[in-house]
Each structure stands twice: as structure tokens, then as C-alpha cells.
Image 1 (cartoon, chains in turn red, brown):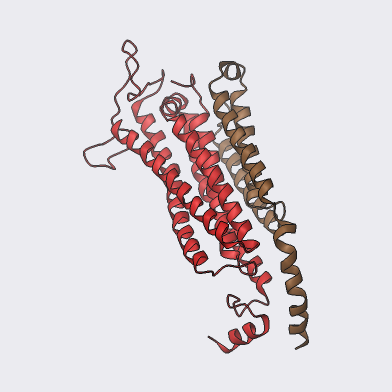
Image 2 (tube, each protein chain N blue to C red):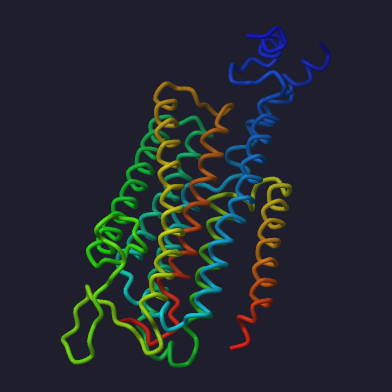
Length: 249
Length: 114
């Protein structure tokens, strides 16, 4: 511990106070501002992918409608509900940390983690369906390159087959899945990072590291978690629900 | 030493004001979560209503619902409505920049022409 740090703690009391801050409030505000600046860069990051999606969708409307109609709306909607619920428990975790109520704080953090993992589990089911329908683009998986079965008009409807709208080609559908996996994959990666951060929060909460004076880690990780939630809200609307063809298959 | 005394006197009061005065209560969070659930259910429901689709209302309504959900999460769960205006300025500036860039590129590629 440096002399200045020791001196700062002597004056202000809290062991979590870093030497370059005047007090805990200033430290909290600096951390929160840093997280908001980071979230702005995240808007730019995901914005680029939404832009690519919109451009290609306008270039190949029939193919993107065919591919979009093949997505599982039910799983997407359930995942939206799961993430909204996890945002709610995260908001409560921040609240209980601020008022110094430790048991509900830990409970809410654990629930948030469980819901986050549930989201990833449902996403894995969705990815597995795409794998079995041979909709993984390119040659990412050896022996299972992109090659969906096409639904013929005179045959009974098979939900594992791709219903191609007039004007759509398989190659264009593959482009949809490149962007779909990039967007949902990057979102899932953010969820995994969030789940890791939540695990640390739970460990530190159990150890009693947070209190009404020092709760900024819970608050800023909460901001990150809510941001990941709103990215999914937009993905669900734009990729799953907005059709440009004849609607649900 | 005078500075330290001043901080010791004012900081606890400032901290005591924070939790309940500036952030929503659990009851408000419950209300927001319920609204978000209802809006999501409405989004999925209108997707299956032919009348909405046939009258060209589906896409505007989906964007509206998405905007409502986005705003509720940012304003309440991320408590941007209650926190310092500086955070809101940063977020809105970033969002406005991204949306402007988005529209410029779409216009460049004549996406709206068709």
C-alpha cells in the first residue's frame, strides 16, 4: 500500500477507495462514466453489424425473408422473456446492494446468472437446429458445410427444409446466416463475458465486499448486462420478426 | 485537515441521499418488467395477425414496440432517467452518431430507393 493510499484511507475510511479519488462518490461516478463511454463504443460495434444486415437484406429481400422465416420465433421470444427477467433481477441486485441488504442481493445475482445461462442454453438449442438443418455457413464445421434441403412445392411441409421464396438463391440465404451467426454469436459472447463477471460479483458479495458505500462494481456490471439485453431486444425485432416476404412459413 | 473534516461531514449525507432518492424502487422495477413482458407478447402476437401485415402496419409497429422496450430498459433499469445528465449526454451522442452513420450509408447505397 502506498503512503498516499494509506493517507487517503485514513481520512475517508473505506478500504475500497483508490488513492486518486477524493471520496467514494467521486470514484463511483468515474467508474459509471467509464462504463457509459464503453457502452457507446459497443453501440458502434453492434451498429456496424445491424448496418451490414440492413444493406444485405435490402439487396436480397427474398432470400433474407426465406431465411428469416426459417428462424424459430418461439425460442427467440422465450429468450427475450428470459433476458428481460434477468435484467429485472439485475436491477434488483443493484438496488439491494445500494441499501445494504446482502441476502436478497446475492439471491438476485444468482438468479441473474441462472437466467443468463438459460438464455445461452436456449441459444445452443437453436444453433443445434441450424447444424442439423445444415445451415452453418461456409465450411466452419468440417463435414457439415452449408447445404440445406429445399422444400419442394408439391411435397408436405417439413420444418427442417428451407422454403425458398421466388427470386431467392441458396448462396444469398448463406449470406443471411453469416450475418445471423455473427450478430447472435457476438451477442452470446457478450453474455458469456457477463456470466463470468456475475460469477465474480457473487463471490465478492458472499465475501461481503460490497456495501451501500461501495457498490460501483455491481452497478457498472449491471449497466453492461442491461445493454446486452437491449442489443437482444433489437436483434429479436430486426432479425426474427421483421419479414420482407410472405410472413411466417 | 479542514478539507477532511468537510468531507467527513458531507459525504455520509450525500451517500444517504443516493440509494432511494435517485433510483427506482423494487415496485417500479416490477411494473417496468411487466410492461416489457406485455410489449414482447404484443410484438409476437401482431406477427401472426394477417390484417396488420396486409395494411403495412407490421414493420412500423415492431419498430415502435422495440423502441418502447429499448427506452424502458435504458431509462429505468439502467436508471439513465435518474442519474447524472453527463451519462445521458454521452449515450445520446453515441446513439445519434451511430444512427446518423447508419442513415448516411443506407442513403449512399440507395437502400430506400426500392
